[in-house]
Length: 101
Image 1 (cartoon, rainbow, N blue to C red):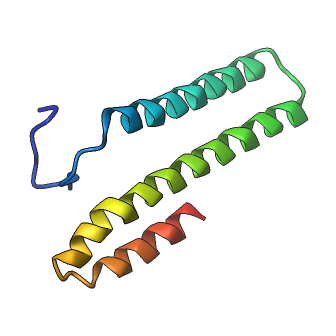
Image 2 (cartoon, rainbow, N blue to C red):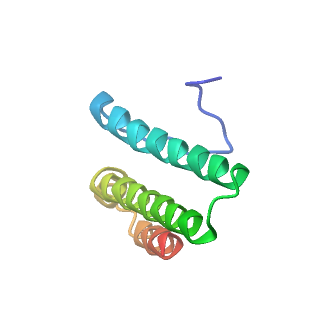
């Protein structure tokens, strides 16, 4: 069911370019590595302040990834919906922006 569409979720009309997918996945994999590092720090009873700094770095990286996906969303999906005449899409965009804060 990898590429099949289901009724419970939305899919992009315009697929992401392979290079964009690769860049997003690379960023995500870096964050996964950071999270594994934090887990190891906890196992090693590392200093709390150092762990918090790493948590902050992951939060920042995740937020940055979210803004990158939002940027692409606005330039593709939202643009397509506006062209179709769906002015309500702006409400969705505002909700997504609020969620990234």
